[in-house]
Amino acid sequence: MSTRSVYKELLRAARITFKANSRLQGDDHVFAAARIKIRHCFRLEASLEPSSQEAQKARDAAKEVARFLRSNIVQGRRKHPDDDTYALRIHEHTELGDNETIGNTCKL
Image (cartoon, rainbow, N blue to C red; front, top):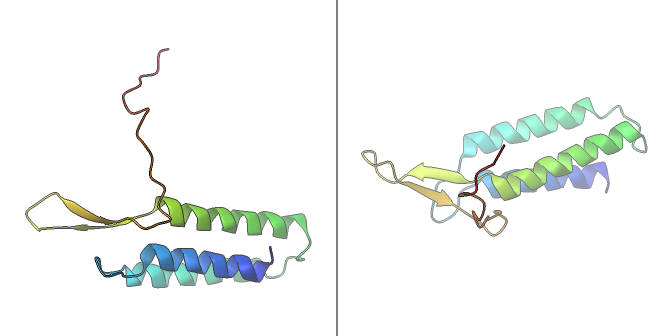
């Protein structure tokens, strides 16, 4: 995968994670900060030879960050100021676990 396509994939993941939808307002300030950070990190790596192992490691790390953003980060908003109930923005990319191991204890 080229550096440019990884860059675009990471920006898409940030947009999916932080932009608004019909149910919840987006975290536009977080999305803007993520875009700035992504751009900054890619510029730091711009001097790497594209075929080098360092460049490949940087692309792999960026792909992993994109995957993590899409599947593990959700937006949440408090439903009412006096209530500890939250509305979560879970989308089609969100990883949903079955919580099968919650009750299991580790025996030492």
